[in-house]
Image (cartoon, rainbow, N blue to C red; front, side):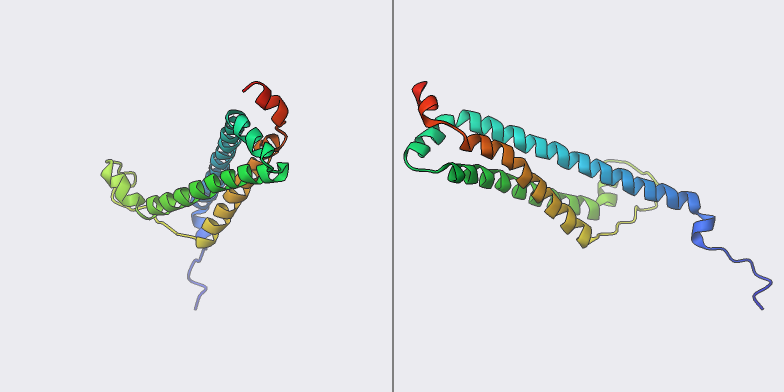
Amino acid sequence: ILKDHNYSDWRSTQGTLFAAVAMEKRIMSMLLALIVLVAVFNIVSALTMMVSEKQGEVAILQTLGLTPSQVQKVFMVQGLYNGVIGTAIGAFLGVIFSLYINELLALVGLNLLAGIELPVKFDILSLVIIAFASIAMSFLATLYPARKAAKVKPAEVLRYE
């Protein structure tokens, strides 16, 4: 009964579309990684500048009894706070933009598919993994500036104040 019919699966008939979607996902993942990397370097540079600007205050705190590890913790908490806030805002805006991408495209006058809407699949696991990875990277980015702050020598810094 089935010999008279010709059957094929979706991947064999639409293989190029499937390959294009898979490649687009890889490119978007690399783009996201690049954005996170830029954010990490931004955290490193901002905290390094803050350490340079706050050397006098750090030296005073050390003379009042703050240990180098406590100084390091202060700057690590500051950097981690920035990373958590940035990740939360980015995740929130990303979810909103993803869920309303078709409306946003229509709002700016982009009709990419002539009336066909872009399908949106929201994957909470991917969001959680990316958020935790971003927070972990921002924490790692705090280590160098925090260590630099902990090495401030109060006598040398306060000599020039």
